[in-house]
Length: 144
Image (cartoon, rainbow, N blue to C red; front, side):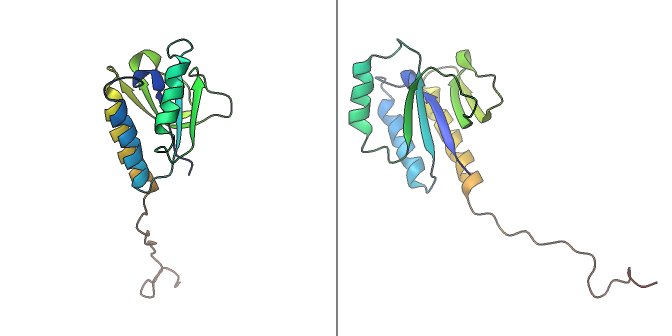
């Protein structure tokens, strides 16, 4: 199963909780959850120097495939497994499996907690299912 998470970079870049977001992403990765990260921002909402600083500061800590793109548009072949998005930009596409909506920017942290729980549940080993049968040796349903 391809697990990916998508977030708005401009909602935590240069904010007091930026380090907490990165720490939470690392914690999720260390919990044996393999995932892809997509960060997006609206054109003009983030300075290129800030994006460059972000990449240089965190590239060694982000041990998973990370894409940074301009705009929140999804292409025809794009699928988002877990979308953490603010209420003003809720994407009304059917190419999102799970979506967490927040009102304040620091709600990204709550969204990451929900993503962690959901990804852990969906990617963990499940107990084997016992087959239910009614044709055991003692049944008489085959006899005339």
